[in-house]
Length: 119
Image: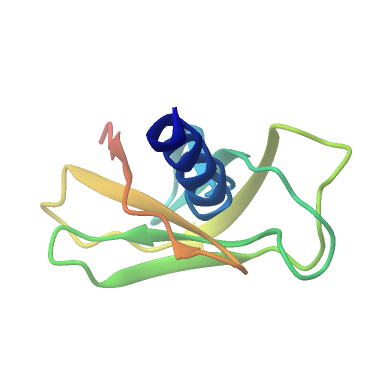
């Protein structure tokens, strides 16, 4: 019985470390002339100014940051939420990019979202 109590206590104490990372729900890209506009939908359990989704980036195939959208405030009452970024220049020959997102508490999520570029 004591083992199960310790196991339950350990699992409860681990949950806050694992919970709350930002998730990319959707992302789209639209070409406009020589640049692209990205719309990214994030889901995050924003908890005020110390723990909220604060950035997403467009990454090239080599991991280079091609564009980024800084989020300046928590979105506690707007979940999920979508924000756009225009004017992103994508090099010729690149057929897809990855989106990654960050929150103030956990940093960048390990999971990225691939977006195919229809040229």
